Length: 256
Image (cartoon, rainbow, N blue to C red; front, side, top):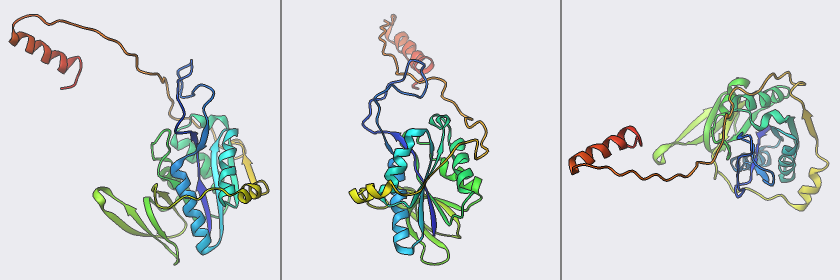
C-alpha cells in the first residue's frame, strides 16, 4: 500500500506572535517552527497501516526551505521517503493553492491512500484535505477515528456531532482527513534520526510541476487591537437615559 501523508510546518504553539511592520501574516524573527499537530496523528496512522499491511509511507509538504526540517522529522519517525514542493510563495498561500501543489506532486506517482490532518494549527480552515481529494478525483471522508484496510476497500469510522459516529466504506485509492487523538503519536528515536539522513528526499519547484500563481486569498492586514477608553455621560430623566443607552448598545456597540 502506497500511502502519502501531507504534513505542514507551523509556528510552535508556545511562540509569541507579533505582526511585523508591514502588517502582513508574517511575524517577527525568533519564532520557532514545528510539525502541525493534527498532521502528526495522520503520520502515525500511516505508519501503523504500513506495519499491518506493508507498503511505503511518503511524507509530502509544500512550503519554504525551512519546511525540510518537518519532513526530516517524518522520516525519523518512520516514513520511507519525502517530497518537498519548495517555494516561499506557500508561506501565505490559501488552502486551494497548497492543495494544488500537493496534487501536482502526488499525481506523478501511484497512491493507494492519501492522509492529511483534520486542519492546521495556524489557519485552521480544514479545507486542504477535501480540496486535494477533489483535485486528485479521489473519494474522501473527514474526521476519521478508525481505519480498517484489511480488505480490498477501506472501512472507516467518522466522528459526528453530539457523540455520534458513522461507519462508511470507501474504495481505493481514497483520501482521509484524520481526527486528532485517533492514536498515540510515537517519538523519533536516535536510530531513526540517523536513518533519516540516508532516506530519499525529492524536491520540486513550482515551475517543475507547472503550477501558476498560487495565492487566491490574501491577508491584507494583521494587527493587535488597540485599547482605548472613552467615558460619556448621558443626561436626562431615567427614561430618557435608558432610551439613549439602548440606542447606543443597539446601533453603536451592536450588542443587541
